[in-house]
Length: 106
Image (tube, rainbow, N blue to C red; front, side, top):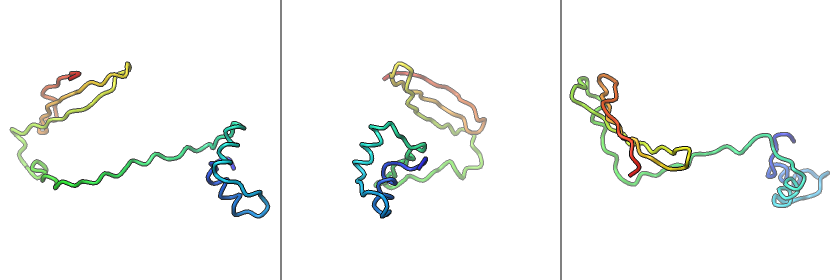
């Protein structure tokens, strides 16, 4: 049972006639008391987002001449002291260079 978590062990005990029937909660409680942990962690599943507003068309995607086009981006960055700062950048997609940036906390 190296890779089994408490849910699988409890389900196995319900299906197998040779094992005593045990609930998920009791399995979890016993595993914690005995210091038993599964080798595999439960996978993180990114929540699905639902878009309720119509998306705007991407006007830059099909342009062949990118001269005069700039792109912007704002990114939130968490520092080591648990503070958040904002990084605002201006990009030139034609030259693939950062034209300017600013970091601020407000």
